Length: 446
Ligand SMILES: NC(=O)c1ccc[n+]([C@@H]2O[C@H](COP(=O)([O-])OP(=O)(O)OC[C@H]3O[C@@H](n4cnc5c(N)ncnc54)[C@H](O)[C@@H]3O)[C@@H](O)[C@H]2O)c1
Image (cartoon, rainbow, N blue to C red; front, side):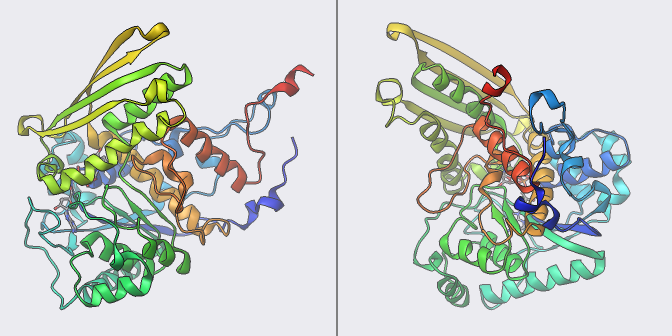
């Protein structure tokens, strides 16, 4: 099947030459599991399971053509051997000791990547205890206002670029969930944001300071937590202005992943829903932070919106007009990172007869999150090299990875994992000048 590569500009995506620097605010469970995993894969100790960019294929053209290359062979993505890392944290542990404390990976695996992990030491963090009430640490920057703190982060970025020899950079937030705030006057325009940073306005969260610094350096930014961070008009504008792609929020792992797999199935078959009760126990630092009502509220908002958007009660009032949806997270230290999530789902079928589904997911949060971090940094770097993507701001095609996907103003987010997957792959095809796949398939029966 002929493809029109010139039209979509496949040749225009700049090649992934040289090293890609990954900068991570928050060197906790997710960040260390990600970096240790990349190193283990590079050493041939392990496989990048869960990573679409590394293991996934993409069908091109008609089903009869038999073209299904691996995504990493189809697109000019950075290779794992070209990744270099740095991070910031309020604690002084290097990545090896932080990974040990996080308790996600076995000691035997950590020992094999120890020299590499030990070499990554945290830079001093931008931190405000009001935003993460349950934590306090010594490794924190000082500055007279938030603009000055952003300048210090920009210095860190330049320093890392120089010392690591990276050609390109990406920043990804793996820091704790910050307390709930709403988008307000300080977040409306870039000017208002900068003024608020000068004035040390309390509505500027630490994550915003990092994101602002990254974008001012033209560096793409992904937000793995549910905090507002870049989901405010000022950051959308700055992202376009600086051609620094952004995406978020909140990695789609665990219970929400399962929810966005099951709910589209119910809707596709017109099965009704009375209620969905979700509860979790987890004992890692993330769980401790979420024990604070402010941080939990941020997470809860992110988790609750999912069902409403997938099920569209306004279109199906009889099926989904009266759903009782509850989400609970309980901090229970003995579990560590090995969370358990229960779902009780009250559904109804033909003539309204009720049924129940129970899900008990013994999951490992950071094991599910780490491959998402890898895919996001590689795809954001690609977006920065793509003339079609680098100036558009929010990268909605990366919704696949998030619990609470960011969209242009006025658009509702697409939560259905299967629509998200189709959107992601069609964007890849489009970027590379391949035909999009509609799954119509009538041509096979001509
Ligand atoms: N694990 C998952 O499956 C998952 C899924 C979705 C979202 N998330 C989010 O990802 C984030 C990281 O999760 P985790 O399990 O690694 O948590 P974690 O508590 O193990 O790590 C977070 C780290 O961020 C540090 N930190 C806090 N504020 C900071 C700041 N201002 N600057 C620099 N460092 C800061 C903390 O000291 C900690 O080391 C959390 O916000 C979590 O809600 C995780």
